[in-house]
Image 1: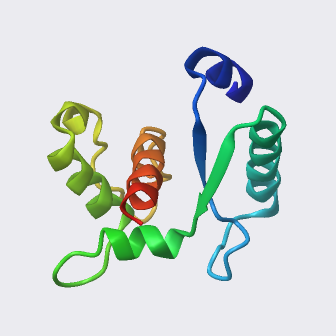
Image 2: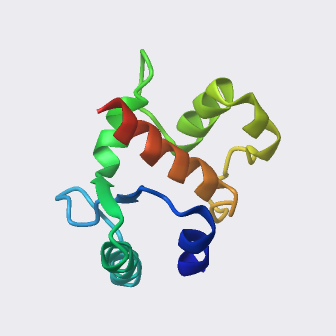
Image 3: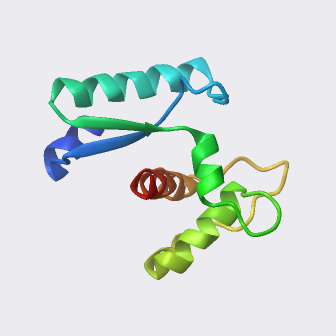
Length: 116
């Protein structure tokens, strides 16, 4: 998993969600996973940056209304048209989140970090 990605791409830095931010609603299982990723990157001497979900929402706030995961993903396809075919359809309230939404979540974290 993550170790193979680090070996393959040899990043200078990793950007992860800040699960310790007061607004974080991540479940304990996800918090443990992100903590383990953070620790692994630190052990390899890779810089780690964390970004609060609220910072992502602020960074991608539309002129009117509030940012949603889908609106953020859609705006990312405008900046990166090659991702347009990967954009999942809007989620209905009774549906689980599409697995491809994680691509957009990761890119949104990186873009928010880069814009800070």
